[in-house]
Image (cartoon, rainbow, N blue to C red; front, side):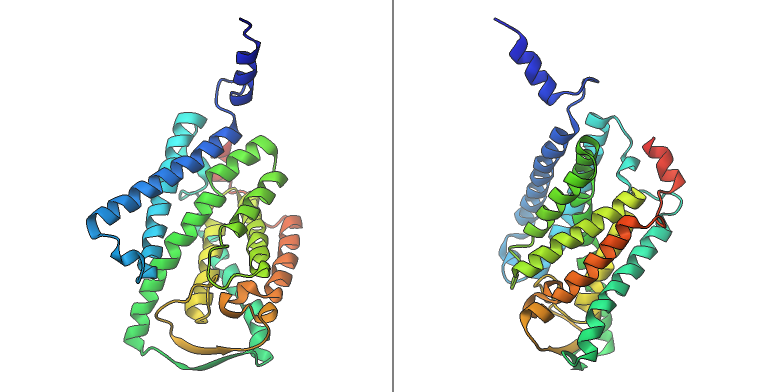
Length: 304
């Protein structure tokens, strides 16, 4: 019996250094992540039952954020130590010098780009704030609840789509193919959201490219996490608009928006608008060419 087929299989799955090739590591990571999330939900359902999954959508969203983030970080730590022989710090989610600046820059950028999208609607009379829905004490409680919803879910999606799998595919294939693949999957992952349209799906994929570039420019996850959170929070709580088709149960403002769905996004929210397309295409092109964002020296040292 010839050993050639076995050598070929070894070459396909293993690199010359004896480690599993990065692309296979990325694929196996996804299955590990799914298994951990399923285990986490099974534990929660075993304790509290599954009644809250249906009528209390925000409770399910809250659980998904915390369980998904914990699963992503745990799986990343296991894979980095066991398969990559690297520190967890190489994921880009630790308190290196400059992490706070990147986080704040992401927070400001999220609010800034949302303002560029929403302001024209206000000026054109397509969007009106018609009243206050929550008094101050209730608004403060809604604020805290919104933070609990948006922070872990934003971090979870960034760890999954710009974290370990993306980073390994960049290692294996270079930058462009992983950016295209993961951004497309990021868009497709939102297909089950209420009121989605093909414009909304395309916009979500474009935003995925933008977030991937934020990571590639800094090699850290703080900037994309900050942007992802502030964009969602400013839209869902600050402006009381739908976020990817999801509407918060407790919003501070009564809002009226009118116009064609392709322009306003309709019930999906501004992410379904062609104005969002224009803003992110221009911003993504600028981001691809700018040299203003750089890798923190402390993080670069860990990546060497």
